Image (cartoon, rainbow over all chains, first blue to last red):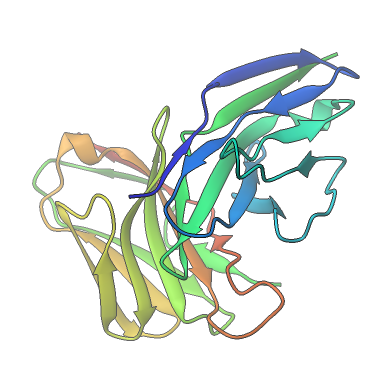
Length: 108
Length: 116
């Protein structure tokens, strides 16, 4: 069975500092991973996917199959990055398995 | 823009009541999902539907049922609500068509259900 682990429930950083959200997965198939974000009073939305290999809002994430990780990084955190972040793994064609989520607070 | 709407933002029900949560999407998506979102547990899939009248159980289907009579509408039913079903319920949809990103799930705003 597939599993997504986000070890940090809460992450607090200062504005301008680097931020890294950890995500590890276990899956017997070929992994496709995503980061979803939920800002305060907004709906959950896709932030980025590993296949696209793009930077969104300054965030990047690299799939490391050897370490079964998909950590999300941003070199300089901004206050508007404060949100709940979920790592997700695609399985069985269209379903997603989500991690427990990490709440990020960026302090001025 | 994909729009997924849910019938209520907040709902308060009593133990034993039958509860209906409605979700409607306007993008002709084939797939629809119901999740519950709990602190420390993330999102857990309750049910999934890949077509009208088709459904699959997710990770936590006990105590829930679903109905998909029309493509755009997916209903979650709590036959006899219990206090442990107090949660935030999220609906999502996605397409099966060959778009650039067929696996993107689009979420509704959520329904916060309290069972007293």
